[in-house]
Each structure stands twice: as C-alpha cells, then as structure tokens.
Length: 421
Image 1 (cartoon, helix red, strand yellow):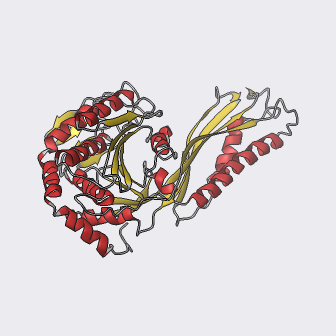
Image 2 (cartoon, helix red, strand yellow; image 1 turned 180 degrees about the horizontal axis):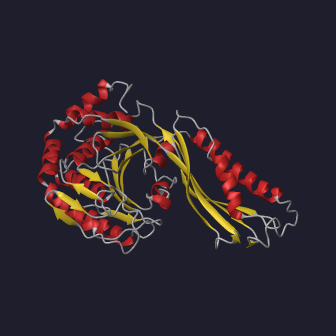
Image 3 (tube, one colour; image 1 turned 180 degrees about the vertical axis):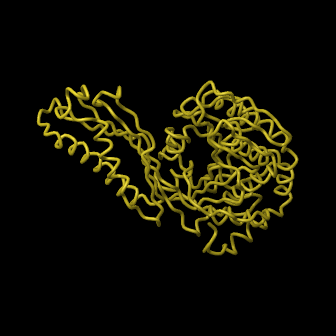
C-alpha cells in the first residue's frame, strides 16, 4: 500500500517542520499529550449517547454544547443535522473543514454503555467514530487554549449520515455549494499511519421483481416466478469480470422474497453493492448490472410464454446509495501537508490508499481532501464486540492539528492550502 509513493515536497515539509518548532504549536502538542485522559472521558460520554444513522440529534446537541464550551461562538446545526462551528482566521486565507461523523451503524436500543478493562474500552461505536469526535474536540481546544491565530478559517464539523444508507449525506450537504470550502480533512478510523489519497465510490440498488404469484403445482407454467427471475439475474451478474485496476467490485448483498415452499413467488428483491475508485468504471458496471436484471425479468416472462400484461413480472429499480468516487493527485496540498506532518511527528506512512469516508464528496468535486485518523487502536468496528485501546491517543489530534495549522497558515506562516476560485 505504500509502494511507488512520490517524494514529499521539500518546500511543504520545511514549512510544516518550521511551524512545528514554534512555541505555541509545541505547547499545543504538549497539551494533547497532557489531556489524553480528559479526551478519553469525552469519547466515553459521546459513545454512551445513542446516535443511529438518521437519528443523531441527541449526540449532535452535546457536540454543539462542547464546541461552544471550548469558545466557538459561531456554532449552528444545519438543515440536514450537521453541527458546524467556525473558528475565524484573519480573513485572508483559505477555509478548511475538519469533520468527524457522529452516527453509528447500531440501531436504537443497542447497549452502548462503555466497559473499561485496563486501557481497553468496550462498547459499540467507541472507536467508530467517537474516537474521531474526541480528536476533533481536542484539536479545537489546542487551537483556542494556545490562542493560535490562523490566516484562514477552520470549520469544525460533526457530520450526520456517514454510515450505511446514510450515504454520507452530511458530507454531501457540506459541499452542496452553499458554503465556500477550500479543503477538507475527515477524521475517521484510528490508524495514524494511514492517509487516503482516493475515495472508493459506491452505488447501491434495491431491485424488486413483482408479479401475480400462485400455487406451485396448479399455476406451474402459467405464472412466472419473481424468485426465478432474480436467480436468472444473479447468474448473469455472478459471471461479470471487472477491472482489478482501478479496483472495481460488486456483490448481491441481500435477497428476500417468497411466501412458502409451495408458492410461486409473487415478490423477490435484492440489494446490490457496486464499488470502484473510478467513477467511469462504476457507471459502466452499474449499467451492466441493471441491464442484467432487466433481461432476466424479460427472460422469465418469455420462458413461460407470458403475453398478458397483468401476469407479467415487473422490475422496480430503487437507488439506495450513491457515494461518488474520486482520486487526488500526489501533489495535492492536503496530502503533501498531512504526509509532512506525519514525518515531523515520527509517524510512519504505512497505508496510502483509498476508502469510503466523508472525504468522498469533496474528492469527487476535485477539492483537496483526505481522511486522517484519530489515534489509539480501534478493533471490531461495526460489531457489538467493538473495542478501543487507549494507546498513543494523542497522535491523532497532533497529526490533524499540525496538518490543519499548516494548511490554513498559523503563527504568521503562509497557508499551504490555496483559495479555490
């Protein structure tokens, strides 16, 4: 994952290194190390507030309260539910957004009480993404407590709907054109050695087949089966060859339908997931998959010679996910600055890769963006056995803080991040 990475810009690295040596920045770094216990308490507190996708309101309210407590005066909850706090700069620099998603994959009623075992904390959502929220709030305290002036503005954002069928709706809304944002850093996952240089896009569809249905013996040959049509489609899709580079994938993830073993199914539906780091390949695959289902329904009708429209199977296509793909060039200022900050902090770049995060939306628009991690060690994400190990948790806030400070320009240094036209 780290092969063939172009060298760092000497100019960017020198600027980040110079910034890291400044007294206020060094004090901020020391603060992050000093406050690991305090930050962990916030991570626990937020984890114990339920926040299923589409129902993040209670956790969002607490995130907004904490932002205001840490001296952000301009904090709003936007129409979709994102909590957005602006820390103004001097007004002559870029606008950088730092975002951590507030939602979890777990439904309401899940036991989210945190159990501690030494330096291990167990609870659904404790790492993904309460660790990211912990880092976001710590970074805000670092800037404000050390009174660090920046040239550009920084938006501190708790986003909604990053997980599953939330379809990164919070991030999409953030970049819908109503705000001017020059760059973005998502804070998600925990491995500080990872930097994302691309966004894995995903298109998801629910494909439903419906007909009259009937008795398995009495209506045999006169009534097409919704399940058989879906099986025909699955056989087609299962034989698709897709590119290994750019990596492109597909799966029929769920299937349900039918009534009893002795019934010709009147309904069957599947949910299909398609992914690629290339929007072009993703769209090509999507077209092939949808065509396969259309053909399969027609074939099932034709096989039984069904000409009566009232007896024919019908296909309903419903898109349930649309995460755009995007790649950033290796000289992207956000990537160069993040890698420089890693090097200054002695963090080895171990994963230079693509994934699906809140960074998808800006990357797909060509906006400088990446996803950095929160520190610590998160395990078993998206599982009720999830746990978080409190080890080197200060590294995440330190990495994102130093990256952000260099991008917007701090302590009199010019911004690395350009203002978009």
